[in-house]
Length: 173
Picture 1 (tube, rainbow, N blue to C red):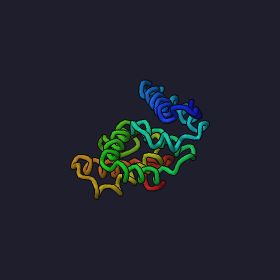
Picture 2: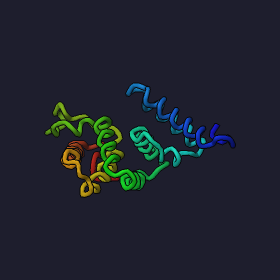
Picture 3: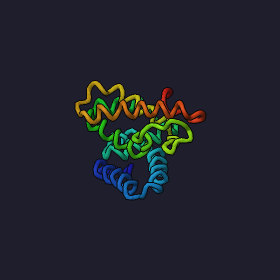
Picture 4: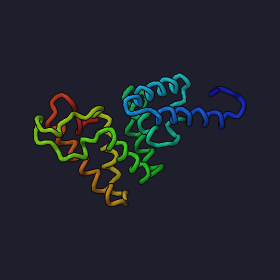
C-alpha cells in the first residue's frame, strides 16, 4: 500500500491515520506494545520522518520518544523543530504527555525515598529532554497556567533526581 503508484497521498494518509487510531484505541497497558509495533512497521517502510510530521500530536510525541530511546531520532532537535512549527499547541500537547507519562511531577515533591510520593519516573532521560526543551520555550508561552506548570515539573524532577541514586530524572540528556 505504501509503495503504490496510484493515489499515493490518500493511501499513505489512510495508513498513517489507521496506525494512530489503532494505537489510540488501546488501553494504557497495550499502548506501548502497539507503539513498538507501529515503530517497527514505520522503520520497515522507512517512513518515520513522514509519520513524525503528521497528526495527532500526542501519538506522534509518544512515537518520537520511543524512536529516540531506540536511537532512531535525536529527540531534542525534533522537539525544538516541532515547538517552532506548532508553538503553544505543541507545548500544551507536551504538558498533557508529561501529565500522563510522569504524573509524579504533579504531586507534591517527595521528601525522601520513603515518602509515599516517591515513585521513580519511567523513561526519565526522555522526560528530562522534554522538560529541558519546554524550559527553553518558557519565554514564548502566553498561557499563564503552562508558564507555572513547567517550572513546577522541573523542580519536582530535580528533587526526584536528588532522591534517586540509580535513575537519572533531570540534569542529563
